[in-house]
Image (cartoon, rainbow, N blue to C red; front, side, top):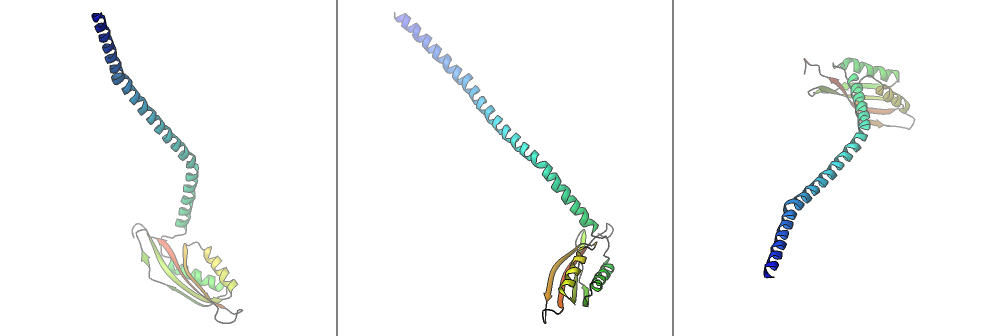
Length: 181
């Protein structure tokens, strides 16, 4: 009887050792691998979802890029490669004459150069009715030259029906050519 109990005890211990060996050397490593695979699968799904959402944004981004590219091309077309300051000042004087503005004064400032573009500040003064000044600015906007208006001052020094003094500070741009820059 004692031998039988000892045999059963050895069988139980052997079965327990085998069960523990199975749990520690087979089941737990497989369980860790399964968790890692599930985690990687979830991460991969997130990456795929993010990529799909970005893929949906691509047409919008491409359209924005095309719009920016066309704006850049338009700006470059309106930015000559030479100063052409004399012709620009002549155009301004012609516009002022065309709109019958009086007491005209146009003066370029000191040129500022950067690596690829240069700018020239221009001060403009004249007198005229508000409608004439408004038409002058519309015509100025339609010139084939990139112009940035930095400051506009309109002052009526006498009665409401009289002429308005206009003072404008603008900047014109031109591109530097390769041999110059």
